[in-house]
Amino acid sequence: MVNNNQQASWQDLPVRIVSAVIIVPVALICIVWGEWYYIGMISIISIVMVYEWENLFKISYKNFKGCLFLFWPVIAYCAALEGMWTQSLYIILGFAFIFGPQLWLGSVIIGGAGLSLLWLRFMTGFQTWMIIWIVSVVIASDSCAYLVGKLVGGPKLIPSVSPGKTWSGAIGGLIGAGCVGACIIGYLNQGIEHSYLIGCVLSVLIGIMAQIGDLLESKLKRILGVKDSGKIIPGHGGVLDRCDALLTVSILVALLTFFLPSEIEGVKWNGGLLANNQLIFNIKPNIPLYLFK
Image (cartoon, rainbow, N blue to C red):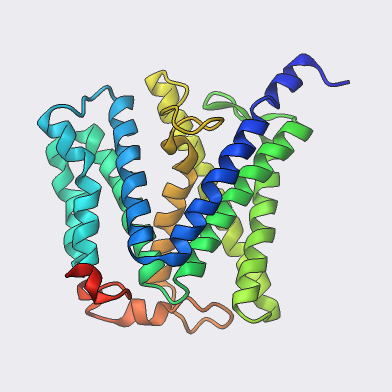
C-alpha cells in the first residue's frame, strides 16, 4: 500500500507532464528552425534566468545596474553573433565584475551557458543534432532520476543539499542518460558499433555533469533560504530550476567540441576544424549573413 508521503511525492507529476508537453515542442521547433527563432529563445530564457538570479540575491532590476545586468548576456550574444567570440567572453567573464561578485557569478553561469548553446548550434558539425543530443540526455537524466527515485527510494544522495534526491535516482538518471545518448550518437555515426559505446560514455559524463549542476543550484538555494528560483513553470518552479543541469552541461560540451579532434573514429564533432583553425574566434556562426545586417 502507498503511504501518504509517497502519494504526496507524486502529486506534482501531472503538472510536470503538462508543463513538459507545452515547453518541449516549442523548444524543439526553435532548435530545428534555428536562426532568429533559436537566438530569440536563448536570449529570452537568459533574461528570465538573470531576473531570477537577481531575485535570489534580492537585487532590484529597477535601478540602472540591475536593469543593465538584465540584458548583459544578450550584449555578449550580439558580439558572438558578429563573430567576436573573444570579446563576448570578455563581456561575460571579465567586464561583469563591475556588477559585484554575486552578479558576476550569474554572468559566468548563465551567460557562459548561453554562449555555449549558440556555439553548439551554429559552430559545430552536427549543429541541430548537437543541441538535441544534450537536451535529450539532460531530460533523460532528470526524468529517470525522478521516476527511479520515487519508485525505488533508498538512501539519500546528499540530504544536506537536496533531501529528495536518492542514490537510486542518481544511478537511474545516469542509466537513462547513457541509453538515450548512445542511441543518438550511434544513429549520427551511421550505426558504427563502437560509436554506441562512445555515445554511452559521453552521455553518462553529461548525466554526471547534469546532476552536479542540479545539486549546485540546490545548494545555492539552501544557502539563500529559498525553495525555488521562481514560479513561472508549474511543477518545476523557475527557469533556473528547470535549466540548472543544462547550464553546466552546455558549457562542458562546448569545451569538448572545441578541444576534441574530429579524427577520433566514431565521433563526428567537426572538432578538428574547431581546434585547429587559428581564426576560430573571428568567424561568424554558420547562419545567413542577412541576420546581421
